[in-house]
Structure formats: structure tokens, C-alpha cells
Length: 268
Image (cartoon, rainbow, N blue to C red; front, side, top):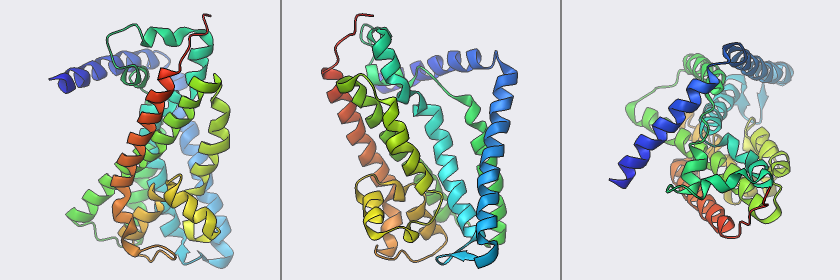
């Protein structure tokens, strides 16, 4: 019953947040257009890069587009659910984080439900169009099992990226500042996902597989769907993407709750 209660409460909280954001419709539309333009620019950059050499490693343009689209669709869901975690330090410094502690709700859940970023619709439009396009170009046989795996991989990617945002935000409990770590850790890690992991040095591949597991966001799942080999890793490693995402998010939640125990109000 407690789970049902939290689910109902979550939808009520995000409903209020969405209505507030839609009050500024022009800004909402312009953010969607901005997202579409930015990711289209990334795709064009890939095309220009591959125009001369045709492939990067053994990945062609359409396979790299699939890799990009898979990364972006999971990032879109991550923005909806967790992007505001990077601003946790602002709430701590302003003293407004205290309100999440005085209400009879799990503080992590309450903070997560505080905002629902609907402008990530731009990511979904781009991803759906590109996935449909490359599926035709690559003649992907979308069986029920493969489609189900794609959904699981997207969920795993959301949990991995959201988990890293949660860990970064938790640093604010110890340092009172954390958003700078987003640009040091999260931003470079996301950029790595735009290209096949195999092109990077072996050490970096190992780190993105077993330390900050961004290889499981899109690269390893893509090798399963596109039936490609994974040098230095077992070919079946991509099947573990949903499990890796769940385990990484559980770890991030534990770190966040440990940080919460050390929280001291700034009194602002």
C-alpha cells in the first residue's frame, strides 16, 4: 500500500510541476527546438567525420546514429526524472533543503518528484525519428525479444545516468558545492557515449564498463541489437545493461542517503 501511495503522490507532484512549466509556452517550445537543433548538429558532425573514411572502427554512419539515438533517448528520461539533482547544492546553500526533511515523505523521493522537466520532448522526437530511420537503413529485425531488450536497455541507461547525477548531488552534503562536478564527470561521460567504446584506450574502456558504467548506457546494448562484436569484452555483456543500471542506481541511492545523514543546515 505504501508503494501505491507514493506512486499516486508522485503523479500529483509532477502534475503540478508540469502545469507550472506550461505557463511559459514560448520558452517551452524554444527549448524543444534548441534540443532538436543541437542533436541534429551532432549527427551532421558524425556524417562529415565519416564522409572521407566511411567507418569509425567497424561502425558505419547509420550504426553510429543508432548509438547516438539510444544515448539521447535514455538521457531524455534522465532529464525528466533526475536532472534537477545537480542543483541540490543551491538548495543546501539557501537553506531551502530543510523543507524536504520536515515533511512525512522520504526526502529522496520528495526531491526527485519536485520537478518534472517536460522540455526533454526534443530528445524523444529526435531519438524516435533517428531510430526509425536507421532501423530501415540497417534492416534491423525487430522481434518481440529484441524490442523488449531495447526497453530494458533504455531503463538501464536512465538508471546509470540518473545514478551518476544522484552521486554528484550527494557530494553537496559533504562539500556544500557539487554542480561543478557535473562538468567534470557527467558531461565528459555523456560525450563518450556518442561514439563506439572500442575507439578509446583500453583503460578508458575498462573504466566506462566497470567503474562509471556508461558503456552500458548505449554501446553494449547496441552491440547486442546490431549483432556486433565487442573487442576486449564478452559479446553477451550487453545483456547485463538493465541489471547494471539497477545495481548502480541502488548504490547511488545508498550514497545519497549516507550523505543525508551528514547534512547540516546552513541556517540561511
